[in-house]
Amino acid sequence: MNLQTQRIADIQTALQTAQLDGWLFYDFRHSDPLAYRILKLDAHTHTTRRWYYFVPAMGEPTKIVHRIEQEKLDALPGRKCVYLPWQEQHGFLREALAGAKRIAMQYSPLNAIPYISRVDAGTIELVRSFDVEVVTSAELVQQFEAVWSPAQKAMHITAAENVHRIIHEAYAEIARGIRADEAVTEYGIQQFMMRRFAEAGMICDAPPIVAVNANSANAHYSPNSERFSPINEGDFVLLDVWAKLDQPSSVYADLSWTGFVGESVPEAYSRIFDIVAGARDAAVTFVQSKVHAGESFRGAEVDDVSRAVIRDAGYADRFNNRTGHSIGAEVHGNGANIDNLETPDTRFVVPNTCFSIEPGIYLPGEFGLRSEIDVFVGEDEVVIAGQPIQTAVIPILTL
Image 1 (cartoon, rainbow, N blue to C red):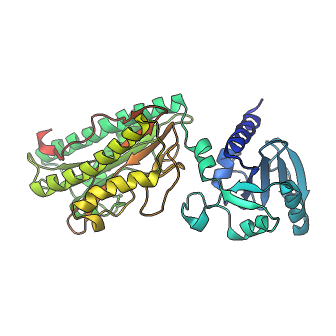
Image 2: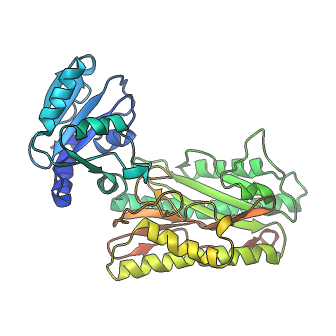
Image 3: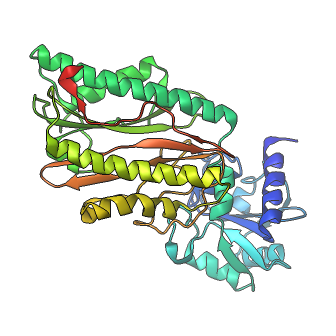
């Protein structure tokens, strides 16, 4: 049994468990990258025409492809239907869906989870015109996109240990440069970490964030060769660092730490850190309690727990981001996010998936502080790699 055939068998098992009649994949000009990943298709092939692939809960799948690109889905099992005029396309689709009542598609009601909403409204209308109910594939996508193998879990732990070490090396490099009266900059420290990644066999989709003082209040600020600030004694420095092993099927680690260029940390930073760390730890405690009790929980619930700590401290309007995101082969993965702010992510957190917990408080013109850890949820365990986690702002000049 080849890779695609095994994947279709696994999808059919998942559909039977979910009591769905099928899963309809649809793409136009790479509009749905999830379809390529889940079906194990080459995402780099030239694609200019619409294709459909219907996997029924039982029975043979159906491929619907345009005459110009009729080989598009040849790697997949199933009956092939080749269309030219649109009427043929609609006829083949109606035939493929005959007898199906409820099917999954990459769709999210009210666009609540935009990471899943890959199918346009018109195509949803077309499928519904065949008297078929369309439900979200969000939970199915998690099973095939977010669940890690034991090898991936091991690679994550190694990646987190490396990222943790490189963060501390970066703070030590700041201290060394300051003591040597050298010019230390955000960009210079960022490139220092990139060199360390290469030495450790690590890769990342973008360089790490090194943000000083007011720059750290911009959650996605990142220096480059033309835009950066100096790092001087008395500065606050946030590092947000993500990377993965340069190996097939590797997954990311994503950690954020904060430090102060001095020998003691001012109370203004310590006070905000304690609030943020409290929100982080409350979320972890909630997750641990649910897992140890064998109870399911949703990403939005974890966000609510963390956000309540910051709200009760009077900083609700300064917590500008969701509490966390799914982590996988991309640093922002396709599993449940820890979010009830930007989206109401009501997906259940499924076993053997990973997500960040990174609450923050952002004070424009002053500084922004977040503390980010990665949480892997197993069948009966909660693993936080990259130990020890941060418990106080680092006084950098003591390093």
